[in-house]
Length: 191
Length: 191
Image 1 (tube, chains in turn red, brown):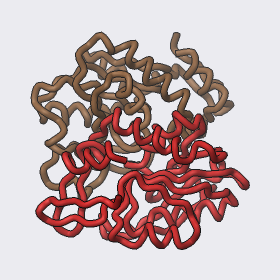
Image 2: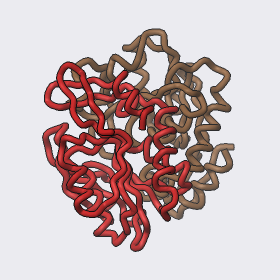
Image 3: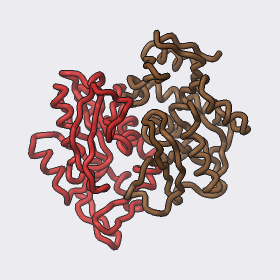
C-alpha cells in the first residue's frame, strides 16, 4: 500500500538492532486519516469473506483493528497482556515472548468474547517473528473459532514470521512489507 | 448521552467492590458503531474549541480517542503504562495508582509528541478517582501544553475525581455519569 510505504519512508526511523520506529503515526502517536485508510484497505482485502469478529492485541493494534471494524461492522476484541484482575479467571490464555521488551508475557481473552465457530480476522500493527500472531492463533484454536486470515500493517519481511504463517496455509495480508533496512535509514519494500 | 446509558444498562454488569464491567462493548470487546458515536459526541461538545491533539492512555482509551480524532482530524497520542524500552528516555512521565489493579504504575509520553503551547483534549473511558486524568494533566503541564478539557465516556459520579477536576476549573464532559449502582445491578444516571 503506497500510502503506508510513503509514510514509513518519510516518518519512520531505523534504530540499531533492527528496530523500525513508527511511533509518530502508528504505535504512540496515531494519524487518524492514515489509520482509517489502513482499515479501509483491510476491508478491501477481506471484505468478501464472512468475518464475525476482529481480534487484535493491546495496545498498538487497537486503533487499526477498530478502523477496520468500522468498515466490517463487527466487534473488535483486543487480547490483554499480563494478568488483569478485571478480566477474571474465565479467559483463554497464550504464552508469548516480546522481542521488543526482551521478556515473556501472557496474553488473554475473555471466553465470553470468542465463540466456537466464529469467523475471526486477526489484525495487528507489526509482524516480525510472528510470536504475537501465533499466540492469538492458539487462543482462537482453544476457543474453537475459525481464522479467516491475518491483516498486518507492517511486516518485517526479513524476519521469519510471515513465511512461517503462510507456510501453515494462512492468508496473511501485509499492507507494507519491509524487505530490508539499514542503519542509514534506507528502507526497501517488497513489491 | 442516552445511547451510552442504554448500552450500560443493557450490557454493563455491576460487580462487588463498586466495579462496573463494560468489557462487552468498551474495555475488552469494542462496539465500533457505539464508539464512533461517542467520538462524534465529543466533537459536538468540544468541536468549537481549537484542538491540536488528543491525549489518552492505553489501552481502553485508545479506540474512543481515535474515534474522536477522526472527527477532529488531529493526531491522538496515547500515554504508555509501565516502562517501555521503545519509548526511550526522552519522555514525560507521571506517577499514577491503579485502583483496579491495586498497584502504582508509571505513565509516559514521548517528548516528541507533546509540544509547548499545543491545545490538547484529554479523552478516556472512565473517570472515578481521577488518578489517571491527574497524571495526564501533570504530563501536559510538564510539556507546557494547554488543556482544552477532558472528555470521559463513563464517570462514576459517586467517586471524587469529577468534582475535584471541575473544582480546579477544568471543563469535564462525561457522556454518562453513574450516580449510583448496587449489587443487584441497578444503575442510576445523573440527569
